[in-house]
Length: 462
Image (cartoon, rainbow, N blue to C red):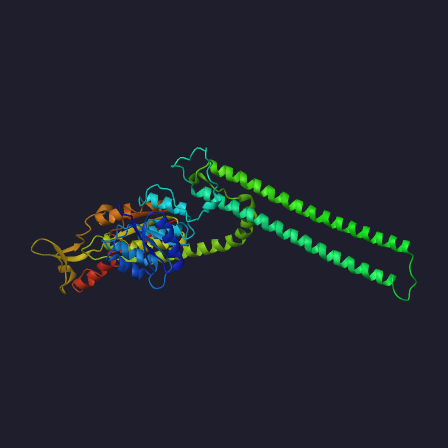
């Protein structure tokens, strides 16, 4: 079976290289481009099985590229993963609203990348090939009478990493011992030189030409005392440094024993079962200091964003033509804009779409279909004043099938604390006052007011 093909879109050459290498190790074929515009050109000729899209790029960013890919029927079915350092629930909701299936962080490990691709069905559950090079000479040859290892037994990634870690620790231990012995030797030479210089100066004073010849017995006794003092001092220095070395060796041994215990535990578990528990005790003090300063600022910023969003919805009016349902595919972009603003502001609660239907001055054609009166006649001469498109106040009469499907696909908003509702009871509520019905009021003037009343307004219930 041919390898699945992926497209990596990123303006960073190093990021493209790292992700491409991991994908190749998982058995995927990888093409790369450095801009969103190049990605759109690529998709005119190719159909990859998945797209990894960077967020921040010069020119067109990843979100705009994702929107265009999903709007094109020929490419809408291709799954898109945002390959970015951005994160958070709000950002995840935003990219999912545009059609992306999820987020892949740029610091992702090969095992996590494999799990994401397994969920998409792009790879089989095969072992990940390691890029580490193992020194074959370090493996001892098999004994003549030894039983051969089964051919099916392979080293996994964890064993290889542990072998490299153990080798690195041994090298660091050797270098540390070498450095300590060189330090001891250097200090010992310095002390010996200083004592030897002082001893020679003392002898020169004793044997000065103008001085009397000293007694040999006294000189021998003095020389013996100096030698004893020198040997004693060297012994003390040697004891001190050996004690320091002994303490360091104990610390290294304790560390190695702890690492060996960790390695034994890791071997008992598979890589997928390994869970890294956060050290909450050590992190609590640090988090408490930063959160105390940041909590007030974050709360104030969040409250300001919510108030700005609420104020914006009070003046938001979405008008729609007489011959269209209030909620159809042409209103999806406007509703998406409202939802994205709510997510960015951190709003949680109900977003109610209030439907208003204009009462138009209408005329029927030969087939019995109603049209807006375009002649400059008096409103009192209209054949019919009302709204034939919105026939009653039932919510279903204001929605097309496509818009109903759109709303059913927005169920994930409940997890974000947002609920979309439709209020059709306001259908007869006048948003703009109509002119008086008289011979002096023209059909055009009346229909201008009706068109303004043919609208959707927003009501919030936090």
